[in-house]
Amino acid sequence: METEKQESDLVYTNNDVKKENKFKKFLFKHKYYLGLILIIIVVVLWALIKISILKSSFNKEKSQIITNYELKLDSLNSNRFLLTAKTFSWAIRSELLRENKDQVNQFFNDFIKNTDVIKLQLINPETSIVEISTDKKDEGVKMPINTAIEDQVVNVNPTDFQIITPISGLNNQIGIFVMKIKKLNHEQE
Image 1 (cartoon, helix red, strand yellow):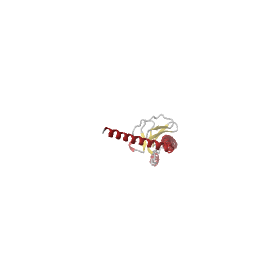
Image 2 (cartoon, rainbow, N blue to C red):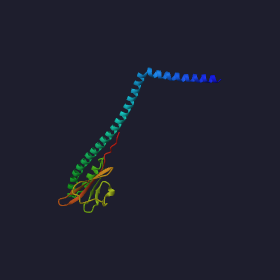
Image 3 (cartoon, rainbow, N blue to C red):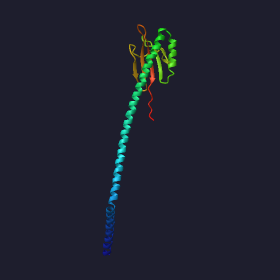
Image 4 (cartoon, rainbow, N blue to C red):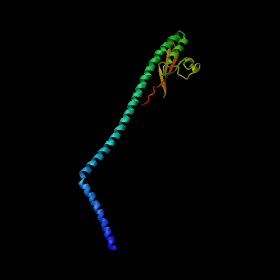
């Protein structure tokens, strides 16, 4: 019985040796093809890593370009409205010198139809009270505004910006024109 067991162990061991020899023979016989497969795997992994790095770089560059574009667009938009406010203040000035506040109110009502404009106000510089506004709730309300301004001032908020323009008469300041404008909506597609 012991002899049979030794023979079966020997057979089992011979099978393992045969399998190992077959595997080694296969590797040596096909080493050229296996080397090529290994090279292909390395090249594919390298390409995937390179693509990942390029995508990351592209996304950073894209975000920087978008940010620069939005800043330039906001700057152009605010400059456009600064010029508009300055010109509009001259029209208000001429009507205030003629004491024609009804015409100023008409100007405001026509100008508020612009989709970018939120609110227009004319403030008395002596009392800081809103005399004319497109939002009628504001008329007669005292505004916390610096009335001693001599040139246009821009206050920037996250969703809008406000342009404050002094209106000068012949010898003194006769009003302060305030224009509140929506910032451009920069939606990414």
